[in-house]
Image (cartoon, rainbow, N blue to C red; front, side):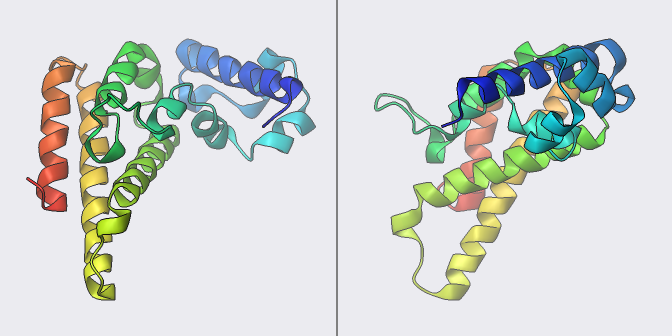
Length: 183
């Protein structure tokens, strides 16, 4: 667990990045801009992050909702909170637009894909095939399902998130079922 000062510094850096993306667009934001806005030193920034992409994925304010175990009464297909995965970014559409087509978007896409792959594999941990080949094939299908869902999410956001969240969640469930072999 991080101490309060570290948490405060990281929040300040994340807020600065968010505000600057909204003002200038992701590609126009420099680390110097971020540290100036957050009022922290360069060495402080680099003590926590290597670059602005790492800051962005390391401080996504909703990532805990994607990695925490689901509540007992929740229905998360293969451990993935699909409703939150689609609804929260929709609420941040202006920020998403500021990141679109940048290395930051690629970093987010990869980050969310890895989170979803991990959830799928954890969900199937006790049910994976015995043979090494079958386990590897299952991992490839998990990668395909997670990549498909996350790419669908980002394309939907890019298109203005006009399809209702509930329909996107239903589509994502079908993608999971088809790729993983449960649909």
